[in-house]
Length: 185
Ligand SMILES: CC(C)(COP(=O)(O)OP(=O)(O)OC[C@H]1O[C@@H](n2cnc3c(N)ncnc32)[C@H](O)[C@@H]1OP(=O)(O)O)[C@@H](O)C(=O)NCCC(=O)NCCS
Image 1: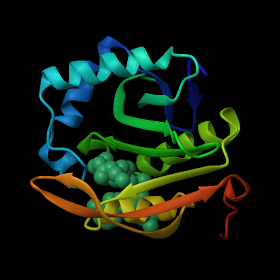
Image 2: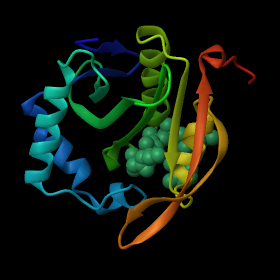
Image 3: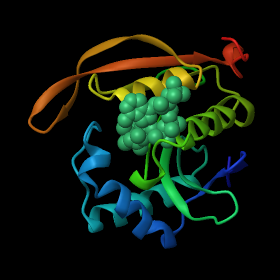
Image 4: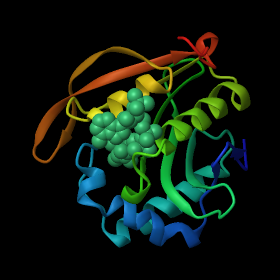
């Protein structure tokens, strides 16, 4: 599917452009943002490459990666970098992840971003299952993924090699029939 253009109350998911490189570099270059992620802060050159590869993968057919801008609905300004990648060895399944600019944390944008990604997954892409993984120390992601309606499913031991060591991941999943969550679930 190309292009993605989904909107919610305050935010939009849209395709990345070369004009987003500075904003993505602010996010991916940050020690605070990457503290619990599977990589260390990225240089400007590395971000150039990430955005270029993301733009190239967007128009591939079939498309198996949706690396997208999370942007202000009215401003169009990028405040987050989010990604949905189809699982190569599973039927109609994908993994999601993302990061927001630090000055956009704590006001519900993360939850809105997950909602937009799950709408993309289940409504637009007709997927069956979506999952996400977080560092065991990432308390913000733990609350966010549960708040978005996902279920904690378990621990992958030695999942990610980062900062010189292997670390575990805690995983969360949601099935198509669980989306959208009801008010009281
Ligand atoms: C994780 C992240 C996306 C959360 O985004 P956010 O916009 O701050 O989250 P929200 O404001 O939507 O909050 C969602 C829930 O998480 C909680 N939360 C947010 N930040 C938190 C923190 N630092 N510690 C504990 N809980 C936190 C909120 O209270 C809320 O829970 P509630 O609904 O029960 O009150 C953001 O902190 C981020 O970009 N972090 C760096 C990258 C990252 O860790 N990505 C996730 C990889 S799995």
